[in-house]
Image 1 (cartoon, rainbow, N blue to C red):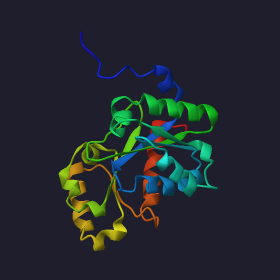
Image 2: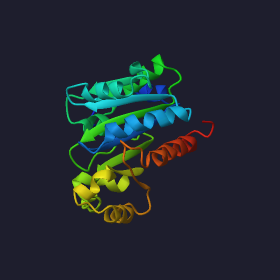
Image 3: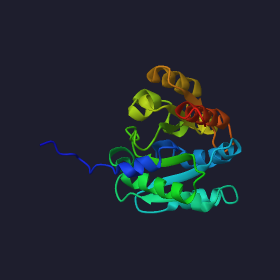
Image 4: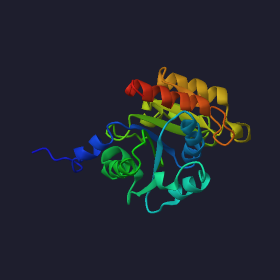
Length: 224
């Protein structure tokens, strides 16, 4: 008899989130995923999105607490939840997303106007992907500090994500990363899938990322 590697996901959790557009944001530790989300939330709110944020850490609420502090006065802190995965975050967003689905369902029950959920999860390599049960689209974040060789390393996060963000373009000159090379190689290995270069702290490229989220949400829900 075939054995499932993980318990089946409660279909009630997915049904509770049927009307919510779910965006996964992943990438290596330190690439700027949290900073990207913190910078995107005010833009999405201005564009009429009802936003909730869920972060993933192994043992702490550190990322969720950081988002709450940064967005103090911008987003109700109760709309930001932290999931303590207890194991590699890859498992909690890719293999068995039950914990994250449950957190999303709880948020949506408490705040019925939420129509856009941002799920953040880190990882130590390029294999991070999101279960299609958890994310309608997923964004993979690299940064120039990792070197301009990174797009050539491929991996499903780089090649298969719906959007690749190359972040921290402001530090490229200081780490001898060639942005033109990174963009060219990313375009080549992604075979036409979108790539956006950003500086999350100064806002460069963020409207384009917000445009991507808004357009994909509209495509998933024409009435949105």
